[in-house]
Length: 199
Image: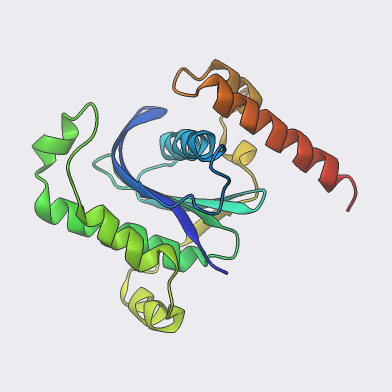
């Protein structure tokens, strides 16, 4: 079943960024994993935004998840984390709509100077609409009305890193990830490596 887990608006700042607002539904994860999962989704989203060129639509597959990002030329970005069954074109439709709604209500000077959260309750409405899209066909029709910008699909987060960067190193050095989130990442990475060797 298609499912969106995390949606955020981000102000890009070099290889990092600032999450302006977000919405999530992590009920598919155990109660004890949710905090770590959310931290890692936030970390992955900021990492992807930081390494995505302006005016590019990117989707990255990592294990059973997809992380989608679109960065505008003014450094405002939207990002979503979904399961791997979620169609990338629908995810990017969600990101485009979120960016349009946000800029219609929030002045650039407000978000360009923000160092943290901005009150934008409409992100929850957009998240709700797209979290488990019931009518993908009608969304595809709307998609046809958007520009035909190609979505670049990468197979893993490692593929978006710059030369010399390693995902494991970035996770280890990350100040914004708790020890619990780093442990969660390492165990997920280890179990995936174990299982991929069996196939």
